[in-house]
Amino acid sequence: MSKDHSLSLRFAEILLPILLPPIEQLLKVRQVAQLLSVCTATVYKWAAAGVLPHVRIVNAIRIRPQDLAAFIATRAVGPVS
Image 1 (spheres, helix red, strand yellow):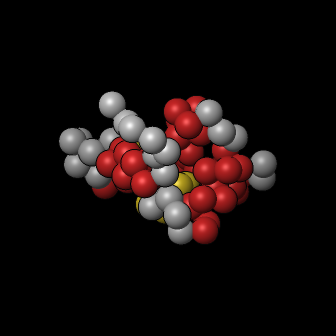
Image 2: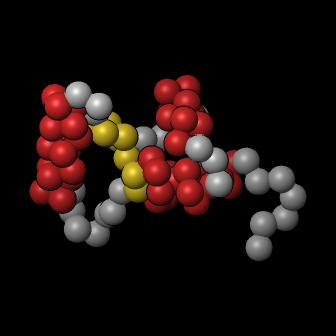
């Protein structure tokens, strides 16, 4: 990773708590991938395709928990308890 790229990612991580109300916590791509048991490349692919709503701040992609819940609900196969 280039120095400029890592600096811009760090910049986004610093800005997120300042720009967002404390009530809403956004999920990182890595967290979403772990929750769904997929690789991060899959999460990036879904975001790029527009099927997973996301927020882009500088070069960082973040997902709102309610958008992840809706994404999961629309793909549920069978009864969800």
